[in-house]
Image (tube, rainbow, N blue to C red; front, side):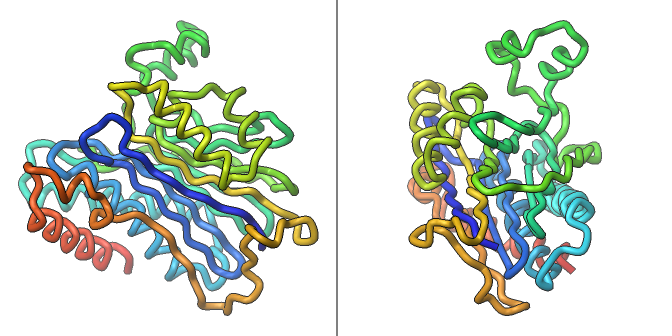
Length: 305
C-alpha cells in the first residue's frame, strides 16, 4: 500500500478538547478512527479515548497483516468500546454516562470499508466530488429523510448536532455499516467530527481535498471551520488520507508499507496526557488525569482480548 495521511485536532472555542483520533497500519491494512466525546468533567474525553485506543489495540492484534472481515471487525470493535465505556460509568457510579460518537474505516486490498455511530462523518472525495458520505444519526437528519426539511435547511438548523445514537448510552448503539468501495489513484478519504463538517459545506470540502494533498488540505479546512465557529465553536478533528497507485505516489510525503513485516504495526493517536488544556485546568488535576489513564488501560486490557 502507498498513501499520504495527516491528522489534526483543535480545541476551538471549548474549554477542553473531547475529540480523539488515530490511525494504525500494517503492511497490508490501514485503520482510521475519529471519536467525539460527550460528558462533563473529563468523562467525554475518556469515552473518546477508550474508543480510539481500544480500536487501535484490536487492530494491532487482528491485522496479520490484513483484517479478515473489515466490516465485522469495525462493528464488533464499536460494541466492545460501548461495553468498556458503559462499565467505566458503572464502576464510577456516574450520574452522567460518558458517551462518544465514532466513525472508523479500513483500507486494504484497494478497498474502503467503514462504519459509524453518531454524527462524526466519513467522506470519500473523487475528482472534486463527494462520492460517498455517512448519514448522521441525528434528529435533523431524520426530518430530512421524512421530507420535512431540505438538506440546505438542515445545515442551518439549530439542533443539527443533537444525536440519538452513540457509544456509552443506556441503549446498545446501532452500528451503521457503510459500503465497500474500490479506491482509485487520487481518491481522498476524510474522517471528521461535527466541529469540522459543520463549518464547511460539501462542495467546499470536496474542492479543497481535491486541490491539495491532505497535509495541506486538512489544516485549510480546520482553519475555515474554526474561524466560522467563532466564540461558540466546537472541537475540530480530522484524519485525511490520499490514496496512491504505486507508481504515481509522491515519494517525499507518501507512506509505503511494503517494507513492514507481517506482524509490524504503526500507530498514531492523541492522548489525555497530550492535552495541555486539561493539565492547566483548575477543575481537573494531574491525579484525575492519571487515574483516568489507568482506567482506560484497564478497559483496553479487558476488552481487547
